[in-house]
Image (cartoon, rainbow, N blue to C red; front, top):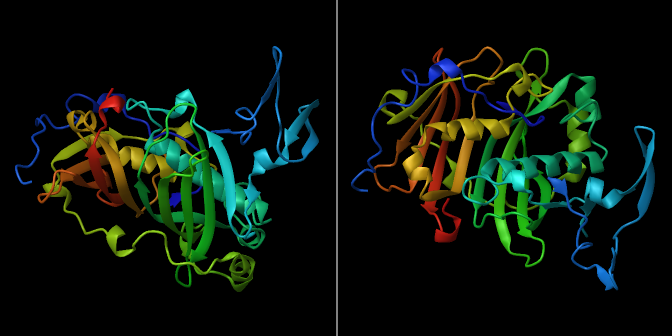
Length: 349
């Protein structure tokens, strides 16, 4: 399982490269085969001579930050609710440090936007208590949310200075889980860039065991559900069991460091995705970009774990891969499936 906690990195053990690194097998494809955005303020600025007047949106509040007075627009800090108060949206601009070698926002950036918006949604509903990811009733029982599964489809990647809007809401997903849904839009064209569905379950923070939902927690959450079908087809996100002995590409010696742990003392869900992709051949990454991925989180990854990233190409099509993140002790940390498309020429590094 992976927490909904703070951002951190999955480190590499320096000694793992070389003899323990990626297998010395050349890549041959199978033959068959966030910084918050002040909404439209800067672009709708009116020019008067050499001065620019910013037309701010939302009520400004005076806040004390470290003894200094700062004018902060509440809407821009916490996002806002839509016409249906159970739908929450937040605006971001893509910064230079959000981009990767494709000259676009990375998958990690997109997932961080999803995570940040979901947490601010809970806070907006008054359901965030003592850190990240616990409601008041959960906190009283020492319970936290953990991400069990995420399915993401990326139609288009934003790039530097692009403005995006993330909308999120909650739907039912079984008796002891909930689903959070997201859509990322281009703020100006309203084009859908990314859609995502997820499933969260509850864990006891001390015992690290999954928990059934207490009725008090259920009463907190139920008024926030929206009666909608999942954005993405559940059947398309199902993953098959993988045999680690048959995986084609392996990266070994991946280890979390102390500063890689989140406030729940385990690796953040976003970095599991990065670790799964560690074993994808660079020659493939140079010419392809992710169009969709599904990740199932099976076990926590903690400070003392050393893991392996394993990748295998689908025999039917070169555009699909299967992935394992496996402890060197033998247990599966996460598994996934990715879909790829040829990289657009203008985005090639």
